[in-house]
Length: 129
Image 1: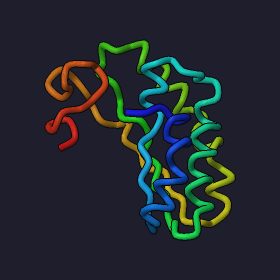
Image 2: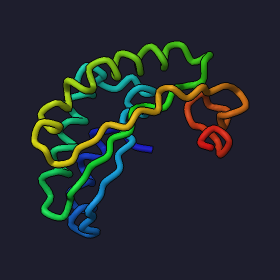
Image 3: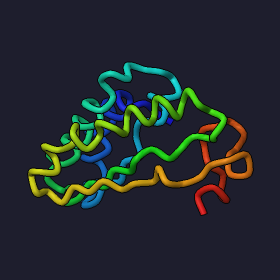
């Protein structure tokens, strides 16, 4: 996976190549795991979303909230909760544009040892089901 900043460097060429009408983003997990500039993660995600919305082919952008980390990954979950807390505020200008931006919530999933691939981060097939 990639961090938000890494996604940002590639999104322009991906949008131009594929000209999607709908974009699905699940971003921030690797920023949390790598403890990468978490103070600016929400604004970087807002910039990524805006880049998508500014592309002429894009009609909707669906942004997924972070999926919970395994319950024993307390440091990751603490960081993720901080990220989630200000996410709606950080994305408020995109929501206000009326460009059909939606925020999807996945943080109510319960992730335990039976649902991860063993790294406390990535759900396995059962975890996604």
